[in-house]
Image 1 (cartoon, rainbow, N blue to C red):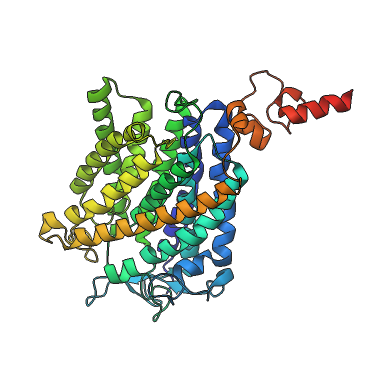
Image 2 (image 1 turned 60 degrees about the vertical axis):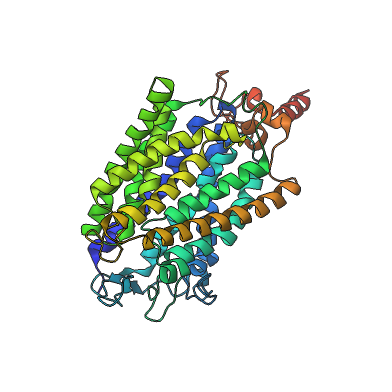
Length: 462
């Protein structure tokens, strides 16, 4: 029978996760230069539109359809979301198995379409995370094309590997290899979302190259309050991301909620302590970045560790991510908004530390890590999953990004980068410093138009 409480919780969680993408847009948007803030906001916002359509057409069935390719990809029997309405899905504990088993329809069942929408929000934010690595220099339509190809070739298959459990869509349905054969633990997307996006961000930063003048000119954040606002929205939405992944309004959701809170707080303290020791002052930008680092790291572990384990994990993640972001200058890698340092490193920390801190006292369907008598076995599984996703995403992203760049569709010209991507790509500016209207299409101020359009306008008046 349908569980109305669980259904309501998963629907609310889906809405919370959807809010994370606008929150990410503000977090990233505040860190870029004033002349490229709209481009960054749009790079995030367009993911809502593109991925929602692709998920409906074929994304969901690639990720969660009955496996037909050795644990690598779902079949296309749910293309167009066919067969997803009027059906129930749900987990129930199976005493004979260490992986989630399905209750069909079971007492803890939720509508399949509710699960479809919940997972859609994960698919939307994952490519959006990548955008921060190439801020200030990407063409909007080149980015949009990249999102189409990347989610199709990279995200949808990886989601199948990690999130698709045997029997979830039906008693005989088969899922992905990481979830069912390797049995690595990932409660809410440390591998499929954060390592995946972080590796892709590393590849794209290499493909597009450095911004003009970097590292001499690093481009100071134009609106730090935006950054803190975005971090706060991300933290709020992350409760849906993590606690919602329990797929029920019960004890496990409460554990994930608690661990998300305390790990994030600990990561803020870890990051600020590193800043204090290295630079003598804690920064607002550091606090916001530390919070995101903690949220990233606790994501895979939130349903498998105790609150004390979550605090330890958060401190480690905050400190290591703070140290990692400074390596880009030594490596000559222009990862504009620290996607690699926060999401790749944070995702790796959270995924690997499951092998130390996981305990079946929190989740009987998980495993015991090294610190709870489980030996090294689970750590090996976690490492295999993490580096398989990292390698797959990095290599495929290099190829996809390289092809789009060679075709001339990815990086803006030097002139447009210097004058401002917002004006060149969107015919708008975020702020009206002249006091005559904002945006190239919303006011009567010719100065807000791109130079070529302004010349044409002035010519027509003559």
